[in-house]
Structure formats: structure tokens, C-alpha cells
Length: 478
Image (cartoon, rainbow, N blue to C red; front, side, top):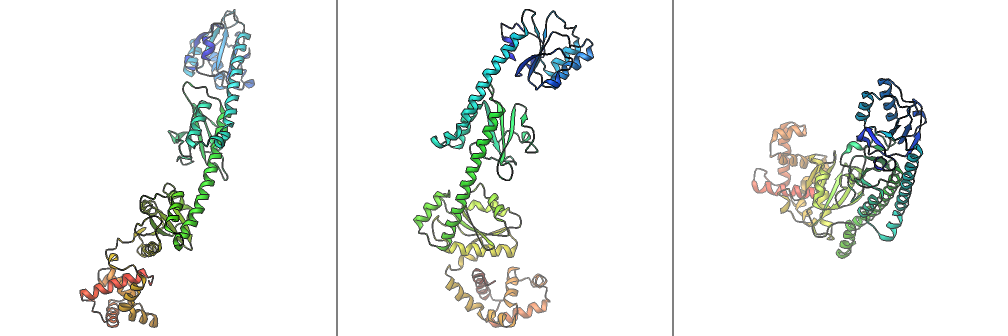
């Protein structure tokens, strides 16, 4: 529109609506109808000698507002012909709506304006077609130049004349290197909502099962926007990139599960294990941990760890996770999940000890109701040996008679003493937790002392029994 007003050949004079000079004009058409809107598509410049312009102030204002509501870009009135006197209400409406009203000198034929608009439209069409063809070339760039996602979309921005944003339906980043929209308010409530938004377009990025996210394109200042068709092509490129990223993630997920399975079986030598971990994105310069998670779904856990490098494997009811210690935070926040974490160990090292630690800690988390238990945080754990034979010998030496008695009589002496010790020898609390009479508790404590030959009022005996109980827990005896 601004180029038409500035054209010295057309000699157009702006009467009102200066704020709308940035509107685009797709066509210039002559109409002498009072209401030409049923035959309009939008973005037209309506030229008239004034025959159809009403004479009253109210009708003139309604005439202009009707054209603006239909998407007309501007109204051009021929001077010195049939235009009636224009009322202030007409000009006020034009200013308020930013609807340009132009005066065409009598010496300038309407055909001259139409030719000027047609030539500009033809040039714009060539520009848009060229942009479309170059956007199609994005697939060739990917194959021939091995562009990363950020570079690819910067190039698409230069070609299209738009600033491009991508995000998931929740407003999170969809592809690495492409920013999310500055405000989530531009995202549509429905995937099939109209694409036009103030200053640009918003389109769904298609994917199986529903849109993977949305592409938002805002016109760049000083650029020549190539139109909706080009933005649609960019959305298709984004969909292809999303599909490629998903396939790559799925491949890495499967390779990660296989690698973790082999690590748990101790069939990989340290050098091979470290090469595998590096290829799967785990940092080698810091220690890793093994986590056993219970009560969580695979997909929920993957979403929680989406921003953390990790390997994930399901074995029965347990989910095994290998990664940096920072995994503890997002795993502990999962509702209803109970998890146990091993002590840190070097990447590629044997997982035999770490696995035992994580399983023990997960069992402890389930029993205590804690979302996360970290092995080694128990102050008595550091005094126990790692060797299972030594632990078994300790349990047999101290608790062997009790274990045999419980098995033969279906009694609960060991469990009773464990709960009593865990609750700092508070007999009333222990009896209430076990739903037994205090006298029954006292009898069980005396029977336990008799079978073990250890007086629980003695500090030395108490410490020995407590360590034996922790060793039994590590061995999975309860």
C-alpha cells in the first residue's frame, strides 16, 4: 500500500487512515455497489467514482466499516466525479480502524492503478514461488551439507522472511537450537484453529497420533514475508526433523537398554563399556550411579529424565537407571515411585556392587515410604563388608538360631526385634505398630535374647545384633 501512495505516476492523496498504510494489496477492483463485500476475497483495493457511496453520515460510516470488516485494504475515490460530500463521521471511522481512504486525480485512470497492483502482485508471486522452491531444497541441504537443526532453521528464516519458533503443546522446546515462542498465548487451543495470528502464522507440526507441537512464524521487520504456503512447508520440514529425532532417540534408547543389560551381567570390559557410554551421551569425566525404581511407569520415568543423560532397562517390576547423580531429583519427584540409589562409581566399572546397593536401597525405600534412599547414607552401612559370604557368616553367627526358630514355628521374633530397634527401643510404640500387647513384645524380646545368647541391654550385644540385622537386609532376607 505504501508503495502505491508513494508512486509519482499515480498521484494518490491520502485522506484518512494513515495507520493502515502497511496493509498489503492483492488486487485493485472497481465497484460502484453500495455493498460489494459478497464478491470480495480480502486484501483488495476498492476503486469507485462515488456512485455507490451513501450520502448520510451514518450510511457512509457503515459503508466504510462494511468494507473493512470484509478485509478490504483501502478505498480509492475518484476526485471531481460522483463522490458525495464526506462527513466527519466517515473520516473518524477510517482513522479509528486504520482504513486508508485515497483520492485519485481525475487524470489518473483506474486501469493505471490496477496495472501497478498487478505488476507488484506478479513480482510478489515470483518471490514467494522462489522461496517455496528454496524451502523444498531444505531436504537437499540436510543430505548434502549435514546441517544441524539450528543452522537449518536460521537459513529457512532468511528465505521466508519470518522469525521461526517451535514448541511442544506444553510450550517446551521441540527441536534443539530452535527457540520457543516468546509467549504461550499465541498457541491455539485446537490443532485445527485458523493459522493467522497478529503479525504472522501458527501451524501444528504433524506427527503420528496428533501434533508434535506448533510452529510460530512472525514477520521480520524489513524482510519480505513469503506467505502462508512457505510457512506450511517449513512446518513440514519441522515434522521431518521431529520424526528423525524420535527415530534417533528410539535407536539410542534400545542400544542403551542393551548396554545396561550387559553392564549388569558384567560381560563388558571397562574400555568397551566406556566407549559405549560415550556414544550414548553419558559423561565419562564424572562418576555415575545405578538407581532401581519401583512403582513407576516406563513412559513416566522417561519423561522425568528427558533432560538428563541416562540408560534405562526394565527387569520384572524393577526399572534400572544408569546415569549421573543428578538423576535423584527428578526420580524422587515421581508420584508413588520408590527408588534406591547406589554410591557413585567410575563409568565402565563393574556394576556388581552397585546393583546390590541399589536393590537394597530400593527395598528400604519401599519399606520406609521414602521416595528415594541413597545407599551409604545409613551411618551403620559403612561398617559392613561388601563380600556377601562375610555378610552371610555374620547373619548366621548372630541370628541363625532365630531365623531357624521363626521358620519352624512361623513366629516373628526377628521382625519384632528389628521394629523395636528401628524405633529406638520404645516398647509402647513398637507394640502399637505390631498390633500386639506390650507383654507379648516383652516375651518376644526375652525369647530372642535366649536364642541368640545376647543380652539386648548390653551396648556391645545391641551393636552386634544391629549390624547383623543390616547385613540380613542387604542379603534380602527381609
